[in-house]
Length: 332
Image: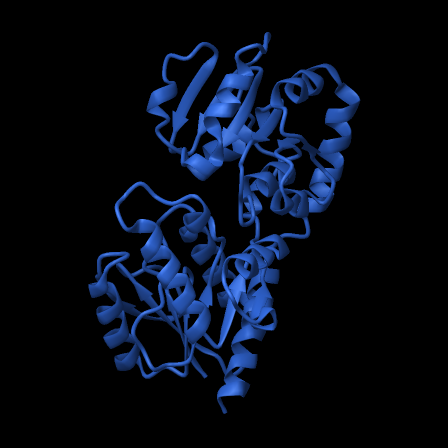
């Protein structure tokens, strides 16, 4: 079975992390009858067949260009790792990570309508839909009419670097990792931190220009994976104040590093932490408690490492390959 995977976002954050983790793990599996074809923005190091495709993301042209590329590759199955399904007659699988763009509409005109239409289309036309958590599956079902039996949960994995005992950043600080979109709720975290004494707040994963110069706040910007691991290892705790997540990978990464986690009390983050985090929507008292309670930090460090071991890209690849095989059998 020839399976095409849209890897044009392979160098990005977010979806790019998912694409890299999945593709690298698929390469380590016994491929059996599977033959993988990657659609990439430029050639990458991989044992799989590659087709270089250039098309602007989230555009009509993207749907057309990718549709032609799929037809030319003579695929049996196509997998798009986000909700934009090209115009193609090839049986397809779509990964929908969350419905955040629908619940927290983007600022550009028509963005919310576009995202809603594309998700509805993907749910209607895909042989199966993959998502990253049971919470995300429930959110998809709440937002759109769909058969829940067609939605398969394939949790994200954690890069092995976060399990290694490596260098830790210095200082006494709390850490936030992610972008600065509204659902991330960073403004609430920064406001909550104002009354915290004896520690700083480090923001990593975006520019965070509006917080530069704020008392006690350091903006790291975009960092390498090595620097990110060091920041996790040195932090008093990761603080994840999100209003909604599909998975919440920083929670899993921090736990893998043995870093205690303070996370908002939402279903996806509770699911990922498995009880190995301090869940709250009142972040200032939680940060003070984490600073004062050594036994709590040690317990969360221990239980977090145990929980994080469940999330591997190998498991994600195994579950995804089984979804491919079921789709192939259905097609025959």
